[in-house]
Image 1 (spheres, rainbow, N blue to C red):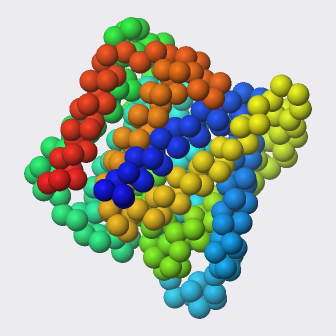
Image 2 (cartoon, rainbow, N blue to C red):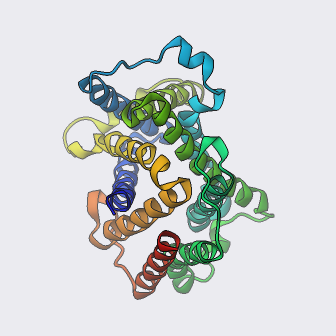
Length: 312
């Protein structure tokens, strides 16, 4: 029960992080620079926690030589997930940009568990679990997409340019699969390092370095960051990285315990719940969007799917 609570809690936390980082981006302008700031702060936070635990920030040469290459790329997968989401929006619209990666996460998480990829413990799919996954996906789609479709039936057409967006949708599913893979990899890294905190730090450090390269190429520096400083700027603009670090740390801790599939689904349940709270009350500078009954129906469907996945 504790693991389930942690999974839902970190999902709620990452929904708050989304609101914080969106506000930070509104001041800075560049999504890449805002993301870099968030990653850098998260890296510093995890470095402090690692050192307080009397652990080294680095890894031994023996470990580097004996472990598979993929165990170190979790942070890069996180950066790819983040930056590609930014690119998806103008091509498939807000709703599909949210839905397609989630679809990829759930599918890939189930595949990883079923076949034991990336040294994960095998958790074979059963018919009940498949039904639970389908219910969870239906709940997510109802909660995220259906309200907008009911209110503005032409919204997707307006947000999507002419032409076939199939490739962009497939890219959205693919980066969602990368997100689930990152969860598995960070969980394995935590097992190898005997520390979920150290694994989260390594992941964030590599992600920060990857984002630095992107910022230098795309924006030629970090000049716009100063726009987020000064009078009238709320202090909580700078906690997005800390919240993201807690999310990655929680994933690294839970993946070896629950498996990738369940970790992803419980975190998504928390993320949807937290997102509804942010919208309902306009938390952290977000535009207030009152929750409608159909979203509560979607949340109930998602919870039913989660119960089936967990209990059966």
